Amino acid sequence: MSDSWDDPPRRYEVAADEPDFYGASSRPQTQVRDVSSSALEVSAAPLVWLWGGLFAAAAGIAIPLVTASHNLALVGWLVGGTVSILLMAFFTRRDLARRGEGLARDSALAPWLRRLLLCAAAVAVVLNAWTIADALARDSW
Picture 1 (spheres, rainbow, N blue to C red):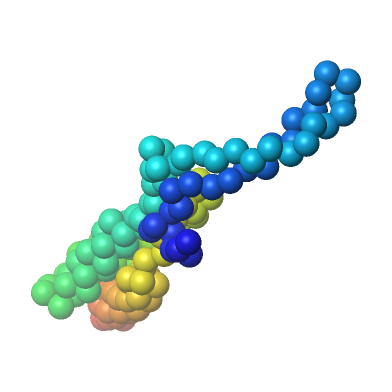
Picture 2 (picture 1 turned 30 degrees about the horizontal axis):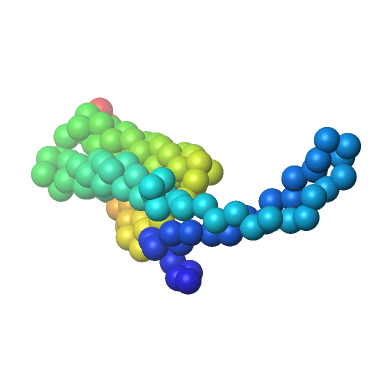
């Protein structure tokens, strides 16, 4: 018998102890059930939310590097920080709901994408905040 979630057992035995009419139990009988026809579905992590968050963080990083506009820096701060963290929150919510429904496969990529997303969002917020602070300090807003 395999201990892997990817290779479920094809048959299992169930001891059936059925009571008779008066409530007394008859002797246990062993039943063999075939479960090969009902395939167990293993769900994967919804990584699309993390990829979307990384795309938003990359856009937030690119805005202050391409232009020095303080108005666009405000948009970059919102997209690179708030939107990317909200997308990570959507991933976490969907992932927890998926794990609660049945068999769930852990993703080796998800923790690394989460860490990369947090670091990229922090860099986007810092770069855009620097541009906004520079515009406020120079009184050019």
